[in-house]
Amino acid sequence: MKRGMFDMDEVTGRSLDWSLFQRFLRLLLPYRRSATGAMVLLPLATAARLVQPYLIKVAIDDYIVAGQLAGLEWIVALFLLTVCGESLLGFVQAYLAQGVGQRVMADLRRLGFARMLRLPVSYFDRHPSGRLVTRLSSDVENVGELFGSGVAASFGELFALVFIVGVMWWLNPDLTLVAFTLIPVLLLILWLFRSSMRGAMRQVRSRVAGLNGYLAERLAGIHEVQLFGQEQRTLEEFGTLQEDYRQSSFRAIHWDAFLFSALETLSALAIAGILWRGGSGVLAGTATFGTLVAFIEYVQRFFSPLRKLSAQYSLLQSSNASLERLFQLFDEPPEAAGNPLPSGGEGDLRLENVSFSYDGRTPVLKNVDLNIEPGQTVALVGDTGSGKTTIGRMLLRFYQPTSGRILLDGVDLASLDPALVRQRIGWVAQDPFLFAGTVRNNLDPQQLYNDRELLDLIERSGCLLAVKRLGGLKGRIDERGKNLSSGERQLLCLVRALVLEPAIIVFDEATSRLDAGTEAQVKAEMDRARKGRSALIIAHRLRSVSAADRIHVLHHGSIRESGSHAELLASNGLYARLWRLQDLANGSEEL
Ligand SMILES: Nc1ncnc2c1ncn2[C@@H]1O[C@H](COP(=O)(O)OP(=O)(O)O)[C@@H](O)[C@H]1O
Ligand SMILES: [Mg+2]
Image (cartoon, rainbow, N blue to C red; front, side, top):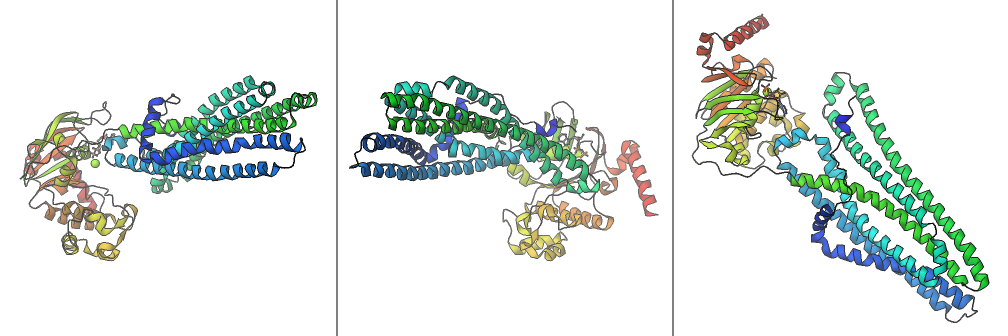
């Protein structure tokens, strides 16, 4: 299978990036008090922890070995105090840091989703939804952790390292040198870990996004999977993707385990060195017994933060990639707001020499001219793939012409506010989408109508029975309208379009999936809906459009013929040929 489709993600090769980090710090601004509190408490908690070995040394050297019992209780009390201080400070610190982390995560999710909602639909052609879900889930989590445990903890650990070396040096420089003879080996190990872990983490991130993308796509197409008996193959493909994911996760874990054992070994070697050199020092009188004990404690506390620090480092790496992807999303230009519509417009639409391509290479529409005058019904017919739906989408300003322009009531559509355009132009699609929620929220989300008016409109549109069956306006519609038939869905979508009282209504093969009886019903409602407004009917069944004022035949993205039904038949071209073919087919169907 083609893995490339699902396992790539936009990850750049950059490592930690200062400008990115600055932008991250700005996200913390609203929570600067908690964030500063966490940062200040951290070195305090660390100091409380690191003073403990020193207190042990004092207790041993100045009291126990010296045979001086009086005052030992004070040292013990002080020791307990530092232990309590460490726990308390640590708790408050974690509370503050995690609190900030969680709030930053919520902000990122909200900002990200808000931006997605306002992006032009072409963005979603390029970005599969599974991947976008990953962006708002794992990417956001990674970034949240960056503050929750990452930045603050690294800061604390670094402080601990400096503190430990300082105290050790102050106590006994000679023994400190012995303890740290292996530093070059340590640096080598850390370097090795760092470079391998970076690659591994990046792969883990990219593959989990791929896996999510694949899952989302297959679950959305579960009918097709089962219909075409693709369960086994899908499972195999999933298996490959998830095996890749498992392998890269395992590689990351394996590097972490390597680091852990390496650090443990180094720490043991350092302790051995201290015992050897310090032991003879104690006997020779150049070191005290308490120093020896404190050194062993300090060395252990030196190596354990290193492991955490390295883990933080890889976290930082993956958060960096996540941050980058999130900021990329935030930087996507949303649809421009545009001007208000001209007042008193009656529903006049003109396409002037419009050409269009989705990908910038393959032309989909070529020099299309098309007029819909106020009150007129215009039909657009043509083969599947000839570009009919594309024209519809462009009228709704989902896509902009590559060249040429579209005028709504005399004003260039590109300069108008897309939200207002979509209020003036209603759209009923072939495969209408209904959201999970109540009937009312689907049909009249802006609450423009009261219950009575909305029910009236539903009744006039012929779907009162379906709505009653669901339990009225408060009845539940399932995800994608699963608990409705195609015809019912279509009629409800007609109501949804009419609620906004559009001046122009576009039907995109609105009846092509329906059986004959339902089609007749929906068509009657459509005819009624067309009264008093302009309409564009897109169809490939010519029968449904023969009554239109003007019919355009689209072929491979350009308009081949235009005229009324009678004119087109008389000219004996493409339309006439198609008409004869379809008529014949209809005739034989009815036999
Ligand atoms: N979102 C899209 N991205 C890329 N190509 C598309 C997209 N939608 C449609 N196309 C392509 O544009 C052409 C016209 O499609 P469409 O307008 O849906 O045709 P019709 O509605 O006449 O059947 C087709 O070749 C189709 O593959
Ligand atoms: Mg279509």
